Structures are given as C-alpha cells and as structure tokens.
Image (cartoon, rainbow, N blue to C red; front, side):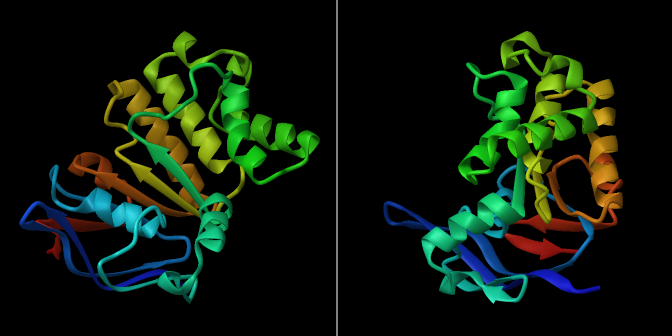
Length: 223
C-alpha cells in the first residue's frame, strides 16, 4: 500500500498568556491509501488537533506533514483550500448543516464551492443522499430531521464530491444506538469502496470497527 498521509515529528503549541500548551508532542504517523484508522483518546488528548492538521485546517508549530507526497507547509493557501475542497471530506459531531437549506442543498454546498456545473452537482448530491438512505428526505431542512438523519446528510455532503480522504470527528457522539449503527455501517461501506478513512473517537467500541487503532494521550501516540 502507498502512504497517503505522513506526519513526521509534529508538534502543536498554543500560547495562552505566559503559558505554552503542547497539544501535540512529536507525533509521527503514517496512514496508507485505503486504510481505515481510528484515533482514540480522551477529551483534551490532542486527537482533534491532529485531525485538524491532517485536514489542512491548521498548521503544526514544527515538524512535517506530507499529503500524497507533498509537504503541505510548502503549499500556498489557495492550493491548500483546493486540496481541502477536492481531496478531503469532513464529518463533524455537530453536523454543521445550514438550517435554512434543504438536505439536498446542504449536500450540494461543497460542489457549489468547486464550481461544479448545476446538473452534475445535482446528480452527485442525489447519489450521495441515496447512499445514506435519505433520497426521500432531500427537501427536508435540518430542523425537520432527527439527529441521526442530520448526521447522514452530513456524511452525504462529505462524500458527494468523491474525495480521497474522509475525516470523521466523533461522528456518533450525539446519536442514539440505532443511528450510531447506521452511521458506522455507512463508514465501513466507504472504507470497503477504497476511501481512506480517519475516525476520531473516545469510544473504544466504535474504534474497534476500524482496521487499525491509534491511541493518543497528552499529545502523544501511546501503545
């Protein structure tokens, strides 16, 4: 397998007043193309900071991050923005849906930013909603759907543009058991299709469904 994500000696330090907080402390991690990896840790362990760096939402204080062989710190912001939009799909615990838009319109948003033609945009969004079993709810707004349905819309939005990498930050954190099972089933299907999937969770039972578990504590990878 080919390495898609390579973190090398990554440190992330936040300064609060006179205090320095080491969110990540010399993290090194390789994720191969098509791998399903769960990053596990308690709140404040550094796992979300790691995801933000992997997703090019944040930059490390020191160290190197190679994405598909490219050193991300040497890529300018316009190109990084394109990489985020084209190569990476994000799923968040809080869904992050636009309340005034329908499910279909929410799923179309990343495609709109990519300037995808309207007909193709609509076809990709409908395909993604069908994948998560919500084709019949395409005209419903978030407030008209359950939490589980909203998360499924968020997954459809993340996969509609067919990105290479899916980053899921506590995607089951706000869901009941049945919704949680459905979301994990969709994530496993995406993994089976060859997507590179990184799941951030504090739940070891959820993490056990990944191919590999990486445990993080106090900003470091632990066994």
